[in-house]
Length: 426
Image (cartoon, rainbow, N blue to C red; front, top):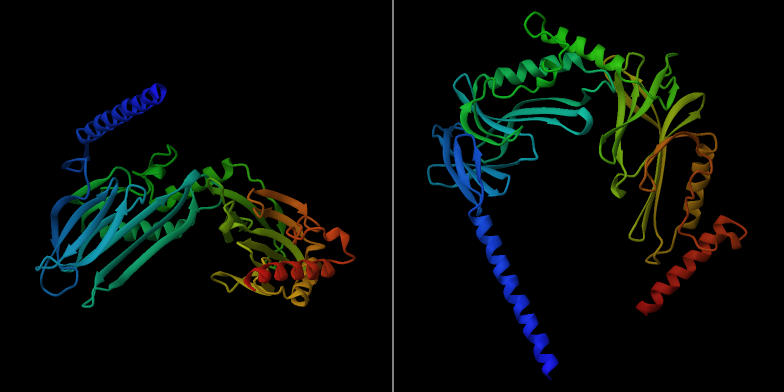
């Protein structure tokens, strides 16, 4: 009994220390550092924090200005609310410290617009720049007036820069920024306006800070070409495969770059290093895929194969395609594709005949194919490797070596799984 009381006493003391420690932690957090955003200084103890109305503009062209209020809903997350004269929010947009985004009010020829500007720079110099100019209609629905983007480019020399597109983008966004007022930006540090947007953030600062360009005496296009030539020739390229994928007698190259940790992009580039086709994939289950090269009717083709299995449901698919040019753009042409869906947990019978037809056709293509890259097992594997026999399509079959054929093994598995599941339901 005495020992029991001692144990209870120790537990009480431990509880008291825990409560006191928690109290000190709360006090330390409550009286902690201040966060400065632009010219506004706020305490970071509680949310939401209302930064108040910082600007007004007529974003729906009804003749009355809407108040623009910035509210920090959580640490590093902000909501930009557009309120009418009755205080009702008619439009709202959220940005965070991770977005690399900014919101501006742009006035062009006396009309107010919302300008969303997102110059994203990801892992290892991988970039995606985007902006759009829009208003809100009488139904409080977004109406895009103009947008532009430079989709998926690198500043580390992995591929050629789309110089002409970059010049057009830069001139376009700076025209709008010159006529805008900054509301909030998370491009680098979080800054809350209002501030003049002109010159606030240069999305090509990596170009000017490279040390190999001259902004004073050369045009933007000239500087981009200088930078592009220098970086592209500096980086050693590891091509996985070289072949005539366009069917024009010229050679194109395939390589894989890491765009973010465990996320990749496979690229087909021409002899000048310009990307003419690309596709993303990753080591996470939803991003699994594999890429191959095969010959079909005398043409060098690309191929994808993805035998997806998740929670007892399977979706196996493959696609064989070529790339062609219409003179302006490169397009994908599917020469053959097939897919099959089935369950392996006994919910429904496996369509064995259909599955065997799919497998026979697939193996026929894989027999002479070359594996370029795959993440099907949750880990990047790069080739070139012989594709035939590289995968066990039906790893979930047990004791399949005891049967005389794959079809017989699948039929036995299907019967066992279906009978087992439905015996519990009966």
